[in-house]
Image 1 (spheres, rainbow, N blue to C red):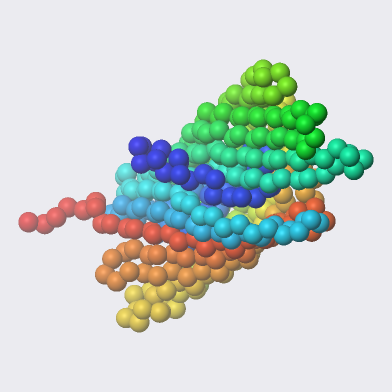
Image 2 (cartoon, one colour; image 1 turned 120 degrees about the horizontal axis):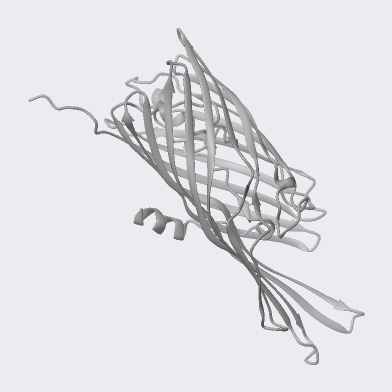
Length: 393
């Protein structure tokens, strides 16, 4: 647990987008490195070598003798464009840490991990004047985010049904500040700082149906999270009065549901498509509903590996491609967000470990307001070790 908390401390502020100023920040879809190159699919995917938070039912696909660890880091280059010009920014950080192992093979498996739920990180200024005589600058700054530590349980039933549940403990602080500064000395500057401190628990339920027909495998997957109150403490500090104004109630977590389908042929070709809906519009944010917009995300991806177990290294490498299209949950952003991704896995010789890489191009917003284009490189190490077997003497 100490390692998880340490990771959570450095796995924030891995964004510089002005869009992270709104809502709970920039949301993280919590997709493992292997699936990021496939457009972020995961609801129907079942892979004994991948730890996925997307659907807790997939935890039950864990290999009966294997302990797994998956650790990822990323680097991102972002370009922002609006009517006033362009700005480039580069950043990077750790992404997540996941563990997985069987409890009662082949029926029950357990997963544990830490990852960001949302991240906040921006710093920008805007200058203007009143009647060309009073000049001022508005500054915006934000940092922090919400981190989640989770424990997941997956159970196999009847050899074709899997159920699962993830329990998340969410914690962290989201701080937003804005300042109005006048050039003329006879006007006093104004500063406002808000802080949202989160400490809460939420649940995600998952279901998968799967079957194999010779060389063909098909699986269906679905997830559900109910709407719930967010246990948090919200404060506002204003420089004009230096008073701290607490607001204890008025924040929710949204209802989430989604479904997907996956198909695999001969452990060589895998394709998947899914849709997920998050009902942000009905949640309370700062005590009011309709402050945020509901989000629907559509994802599709494919993976091809020429021949697993081949003596030729290249034939063992998985090649991936994907695409996603989604609504923004932020107010005033009517355009669609989309991403295109590619990736490849590099299996290590003589060990069941794969280094997965993915490169994502993301686009959101418009040049009429603010356009955000980014390239994100994620590298993850999926390490598998055979632990659970009896040695023969």
